[in-house]
Structures are given as structure tokens and as C-alpha cells.
Length: 303
Image (cartoon, rainbow, N blue to C red; front, side):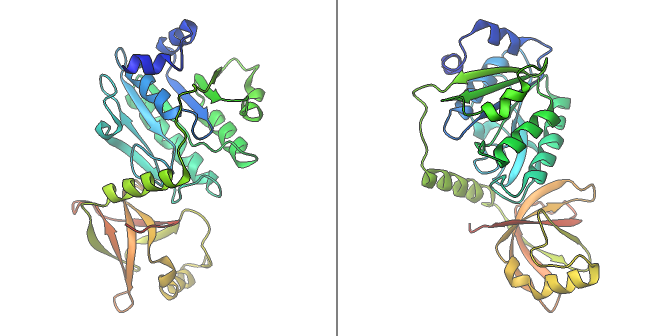
């Protein structure tokens, strides 16, 4: 069944041989929204995992299948693709948003960190991406992603060569090898409300076994994924303003990091205890982990 799904996108035996080749370690999949990237990756992962250990890196922060929205994450496929729910996130990086626009630096940082970890653990890695291809952010993001990740093969799904501004400059490069494929007619178009509902369901699932933790302004570091949203840079002033403007942070998505600066779990700021100078954060983080830093994102979440 999955083999048919894979070959509905790729029937050229030359491309299939390239993907199977042991020298092909990293495959990057590009395309606008609703071009079938997810279906192609499912079929490709199923096909390649028959002979290789395969990992999938999910860079689609708005429609995440591995890890919650706002994160880039990766997981191992096993022998045969048996559904996204059966892929356990091995690692993730918090971007603080569900769109790359305005968050290109955190997107690129997470992309290289997570992909390098996946490559160190798997024989082949497939990278999923967002549907952002519009000028200028889409072009800049995708081209720098190719520069940083250095994929062996790039597979694009296009209706009318709409990725030309992104891919044409790489045409005469020895690497990556480019394969620009048509979008199958049977690809289903998702409405904005369907995408929003899927994102909400992923957040709900992620926070279903949460608890409340208190984090002190005095004992834990705080940083933002983007700008300071009105806060000054000086430490003393920052801590005072963080307290004074705490109501503007209620509902904000955050990541809780350990002493190694590794994202351990997401959280949602619930309230601020002015007397104790502590934030109350809702999170599924286990009690065995020590929190060293709270990274505050730009998105507000209701679950």
C-alpha cells in the first residue's frame, strides 16, 4: 500500500536508485502547502526503511507531526512506516512560533541542530519542511536551509515551477541533486480551519498529562525566541519589567530547558505570583528534570 503511495510520486527508477544508494544520507523535501509533501515522505520512509535505518526531521512548525507545534523535531521510523503516532520524538528545538515569518533565525538554528542529531543516529534522514515559499522569506529560508543542511538530494513538488526562484541557482551545482516533480492530481487541499484544528489537537494531546510548576525569577534564566517585546536588555531592569509586564505573558508558550541548554518540554504561562516573584507554568515535564532556563515564545496558546 505504502509502496503504491511512494510510486504515485516517484516512478522514475533512476531517482529510486539514487535514494537507495548508501551515499545518499539526507533527502530534503520542498513544496508549497497542499502539494503532498507529507504523503510523499510517508511513502518514502516506508520504502527506504525496508533496507536502512530511517529518521524523519519535521521542520513544519505549524503542522507538526513529530513533536508539538512551535518545535522542529525528529524521530526514527523503524521497519516500515506505521503512522505518525508511532514515531516517538527523539529530540526537539523550540522556535516559539507556528510560522517561519519573523522567526527565520530560530528556524535555521533548530533545523541544523536537529538534523545533525538525526544524521548521527540514522543511515538515511528525510526532512519535511513548511509550505512557505513566497518572496522574500520563503526563498531566503529555503536557500539557506539547503546551504546549512547540505542535502544529498532535494525533491520538490510543484504545480507550475513555483519553486524556480528558490531552486534555479542550484541547477549547476554538483550537490544537491535536484528532482522537480509534479504534484499528483489526487492531493487533498486542506482549508485554513482544518489546519488550525489539527494544530489545536496536537497541542491538546501534548498537554493532556500536564502539571503546574512554579519557576522563580530569581533562580532561573529567562530568554525570548524573538525580540524582547518591550523589555530592556539590562538584567536588573529586565527582571523588574518581566515582573511589571507579567500579564502580557500570560498564555504565552514557553520551553523549559535543562542545564545543558536542551529543550525538555513545552509549557504555558498561567499566572504570576507577585509576592513570591514566581511564574506558574503548565507543562507535561516530569519531576525528575531540573529547569535552568525558560525560553519565552511569541505565540499565545489556549488548551
